[in-house]
Length: 261
Image (cartoon, rainbow, N blue to C red; front, side, top):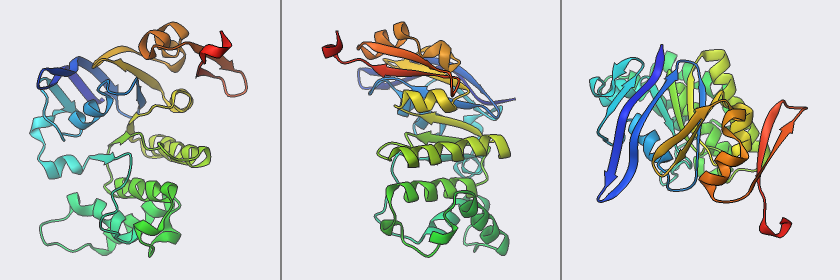
């Protein structure tokens, strides 16, 4: 079963071509990381998959056309985690996580005991249960991001889309967020699609990487097939060094400053 299937997806903003004939398939239960330079269409692709923007082409979510979903039905099976959580309205952590139950509630229906149980389970999974009564604006960046992931888990989705969830976090918090995503995939069978600028985190966690450039998919494959010096240098326009980590059994990629040449 495919969690995502895209065919000939295009997106224009005026004369600017953002996405060009994007075609891809993502199997249910896969952990896919989308990488590539700034402004290459990664976030736009994610928004198109989430139904947040309209783009000509074919999109299927869980083997059904995206157009067949109402906004509420889509939210019941697809969760979106933005790069940063807005805190204009500083709700408590528990209230924020409970918002994930909205797709499963009727209009004017209050949360049931079962909804609170699911919210508590999501907070325990993300190690945020002890923060339940704290306000979002009182939390650190890493804590806030785990709360937003708890809200996404509370939706009980089958597909989760994340836009640079580890940006601006320190290494320890980055790994905690990525470990959460891996646990979701492994323990609950949730398909994870993530945009990331961190090539090494992508290599450590992604089952498959999609390298994008100028609105197109350059290559899709295993991390060691995608993270090659030739491909990365052509895409990013800088010298790259590729190393094999025997301890972790993964490849690592580093930009090389001109002063070393």
